[in-house]
Image (tube, rainbow, N blue to C red; front, side):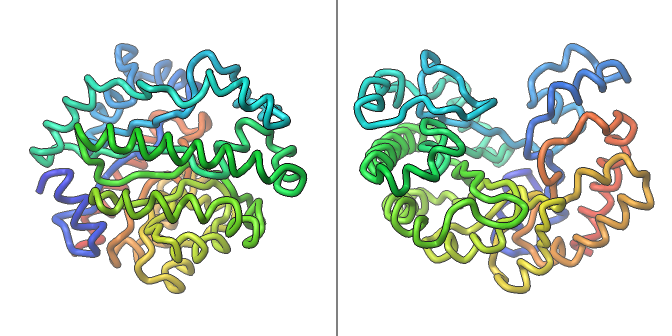
Length: 330
């Protein structure tokens, strides 16, 4: 069975030849540097090359940013780039690029996808992520009350951008699934209330999710932390899946699946156990095996593999992953 066929079987809650064996997230630079020093060939630079080295199923992701390279980078501290509508209007020349992605590799991906040799995945930035990027991590919490007009303006512009680039991308290649980048939960639950979600995010999701589904794309939300309380909010508006389901934050996908039998999941393997040896790693695979058997779930690390994991640790993880990918369909 080819990689894309296998993905589609699992997402349809059908039985494939085995479960996909993937690393959905890229690796930390410190992790890769450690592995170079431990024997990973240094000519392997791109994530796709490294995935091929480990013989993972072939997936490719295109993250389409609503920002031009001229916009100041505040990703490390999320300090405000704008504080009012006038500042937002001035900075818009650095936002919402006309050419938001490189079409050349997407044309190549589309050919591999047509042959079922590749799963294509895009990421669009959501209606909490984008305003938070501009307004600041702390400041956005005040803006919900102090300047709701600004938040709605940003999200209206973000919606227009996302719809435009989605149409452009789908004219070349219709992704198999997509993620809305949100990161709107932490280890105690959501960073916003249900009422704020309903006012500032839901109206925009209700306009784009139908377009996503019309193109045959499975919509996921990417949020770190524990999304338990968020899950029904998003399921009610048409989202079908979540990743990465961080275990340290209290995410329990066994419990989540009991509550939501058709919830699609990617991730959930506790990254803090990857350097603890075979017995501990097997314990984690066994914890997740019941959900693996149910379908609709693709196991992966519950975020990026940390630099505390040696290359030999990772070889062991991949070997066990392959074993349990077979075991789940037996």
